[in-house]
Length: 330
Image (cartoon, rainbow, N blue to C red; front, side):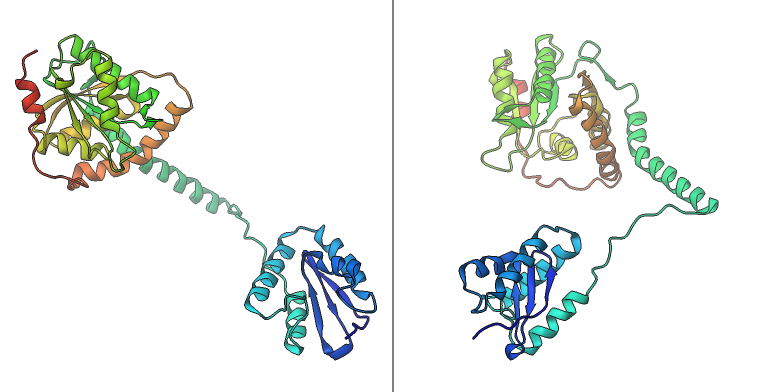
């Protein structure tokens, strides 16, 4: 059956041709009518070629409105309302095409500042209140840690050093974690600690922070029998609670970066450990700034942990690792 000459309308990446024969409508999506016109597949009169030119012209206009129409046409095609050849299913298809043509997609909402002085004042007050609330937990933890944070030279003698995990890269400690382990190895060499408890994440078979930390420490001169691994230190609170309840640590030197050590000391003290923190110095690079910003977000959860003291994700039975390591004579 031949196609009559009819009006064609741009609909995103395709064209819709309304024929006169049989009240049928041809929906030519993404300029396929142009290809049909060149090969003679669309009809006998060659007028599908003109519709194809309109489809190619419509394909050049990539706007939000036409893109939305294109998605609707694609859904209709997959649902069977539009035939694979581009022809509609009778009068209902014609009406649907007209509705899509007339439809106007809503514009995205635009954030506008208050126009009145009172409204702007309230906005500023709200932002200031949000900043205060965000800084309050971190400020409290810094005050709580107080003078219990220093360097490796200032750290008091304790039997145990606790090193918190800080990620792996290709199975090896990241530079930040390596610096923590270097500080722990220095504490051991100077005789300030006798055992190093490495606590980290081993929730996946291919990711094992404690074993990577152990390997690094043995390469820095710490005997393997003086290293104890905690494989369920999923966050700082879990590490502190498990050090106290599972490994029986009462007094310890904590080792971490400066932006994290105040939170670690506060949490371990809340878990019942007499803790002193060694803050490892780092260059002010992008990772350092990211860690500082992350601390603001983590401090809120840490404050709740310190107040409500929930159980860690995995507690498990008591382990004698620290006691046995202390009993071993060098």
